[in-house]
Length: 322
Image 1 (tube, rainbow, N blue to C red):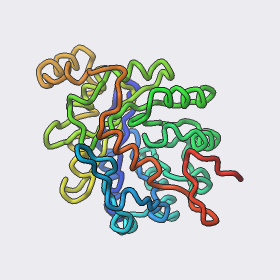
Image 2: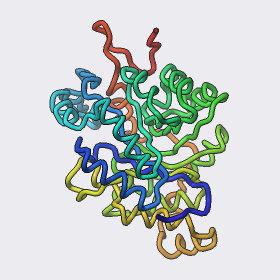
Image 3: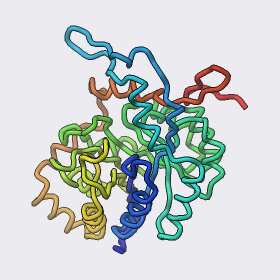
């Protein structure tokens, strides 16, 4: 295993690249550990929490623009259901991570499993971009977890400020990301890291670039720019075998990312200058408007999952009660 010489945290995001197969997930755990990642992360998704919203069944298309993407409920439910990780799988995952010597992490997507997830043996949790502004949800999480990693993609600046105020008495990291799947290099906007650092000293980057086209360029650029957390989708399968495969790096690439962290700043600079001519283009702007694609993704993914109680759908930005 590679030993990093600084405090940059590397999160290997397993997402649904395990396809619901614990044998694949086990191999992912050990591969991430061997490559030098600090965490391997799953997603605590329950297909039964998927919401059915009329505007996304057929999409809404204007004369010159898309107003709502098409993502019908039934095929999405059928796609997600086989990949659900039940309670026993979560317990197994944490224990397997302990045996491998890597930290376990998850993203929670609704209130429905909060009590169970927070009862398990982990102290940190990841918050998806689309819940960055879900203040009631965040308040529940911060009362149960020592540290929150909060992605900020598709979130308005005013909302990020409100979230920072809600978290100002707690330990958290903001992760800059761009919720375009996959993200072009000219839309990375690494200067956003500087803007986010006014709220917390720990600011990172969650990378959704296309691996076949861009490799590790965005992640390495973010590390050199000053991110102290890097989250990258991770797979041990062929890219075409899973939905997130094209934006996921393999164990060899994860090891290369960790090895870059071990370089001195001067050696990192030399590598960037030689191998990543797009670096200056990736700096972008510290503040900007959401692109049309980011807005469309925000409209769909924010509210994609919710707790269902007494014939009521309770979204993460709503007060859940007792």
